[in-house]
Image (cartoon, rainbow, N blue to C red):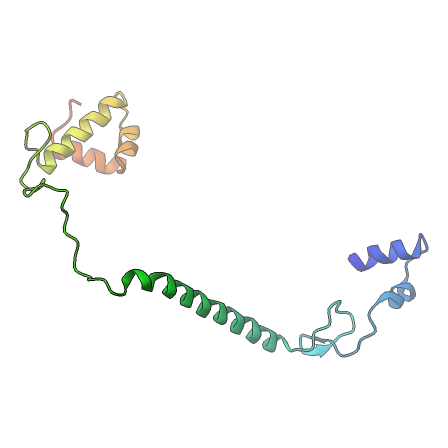
Length: 155
């Protein structure tokens, strides 16, 4: 396409035929294309496709190696010379939240919290269970199963 467009411009309106095109084609005879030599390839390639592919793979591997070296140089100063023991959370109280402390003083177990979330979601979406299930991040089937399990028919 590009060759024909440039020939049309160069020949200034003359008819483009095979003789005119042949005049503008490259004259090289040693261009390798798919197992045969071709003089119609616009770029001179002195390598077989396998050699070119091997060269590209080697370049990619070299770049990966350099990237790994760069990452190691970034990470190693932060790791070398430090004590790698587990960190101790000093900002949490001794008992933490493991003893069942909650902000309002009530102790909620997982089932009660789940019931409360389901009720709240269904009320928020005015009984639309599809929207409530989406908001909870569960399927409609799971929502109906939990409603039946927790006996929440009147929600």
